[in-house]
Amino acid sequence: MILASTATTIAQTLTTRQIASHVRKTLINNYKPDTSALLLCCKQAFVNIKFKVNKQGKITDIAFSNDYVKFVNEALKKAIKALERDKYLIKTLKKTGKIIVQPFLYDYRHGCSIPTLQKDTLLNYETRVYTAKIIKIFTTRNLIQQTLVDMMAFNGRDNLAIDCILLKPINDYFIDLPY
Image (cartoon, rainbow, N blue to C red; front, side, top):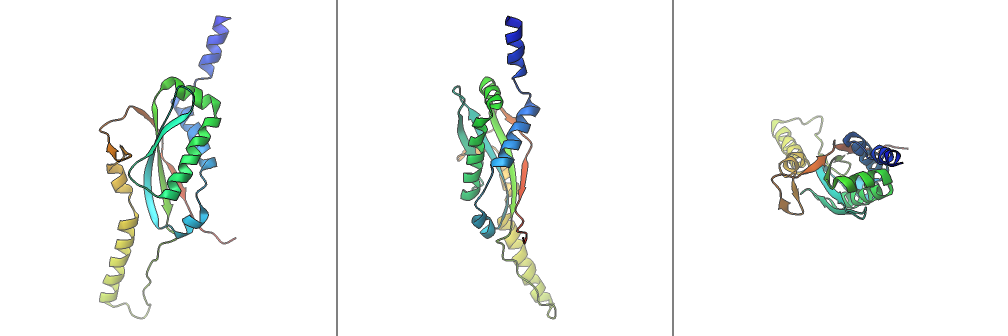
């Protein structure tokens, strides 16, 4: 009887690969950012989501790396909380006591105002102005490099190391397609 009970307990503990799969599937299915905000957003970024499962099986200590876009973080927080419905995942994470870090890349550039060149006036000055505007748009909107530098800075606190399970990044692209 004890062997059967132990085998059942072991079978219900997920591997790191299975943890990653469960988290990824739940986040992809439950991340639903505000579409109207997506249409106005002009940003390509990378945010790390950190969370832990406490002894009661509740997700706690949800934090985001220094990149902050309110509607993205709100949607991610709801998606992370949806993990609580996955009993096998929660049971495993409760046992490990490890912090989970899930990188999340997003590319929402529908709201970018990209300047255009006149076809008949491709003067050097106009081309330089155009290039400067494009560079400004993408250097102020693409914050992936800075997030990598600050990848362990959560809630304004920089950590030199974190004992955690680091998962493969999830990519999310918003493309406004005509229906």
